[in-house]
Image (cartoon, rainbow, N blue to C red; front, top):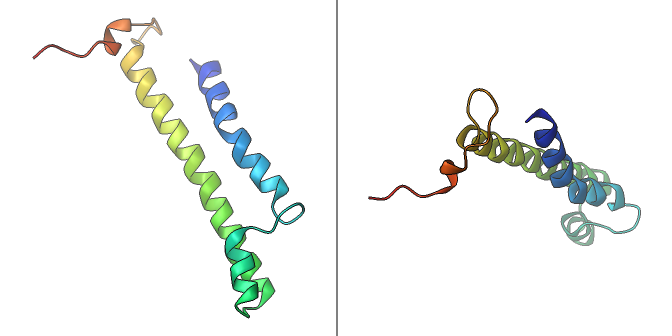
Length: 92
């Protein structure tokens, strides 16, 4: 499961990392542009934009790890064997 968790996190983070790489070089993100056009100090606008982008990256990583961990607990037993019964909804 360790390898699967690593691959899941890697796949989830690719779009976020691409966004972080392109920000400021290729594009000016929306909030930063809006603040600069409104007359705010560009340094403050950049600080806020960095904070927002890091929050997006952190929330994506945390959400992915939580989802993968919950799925692993539901679909695998203590000996790391796949239990497909966890996919079937229990009858009422």
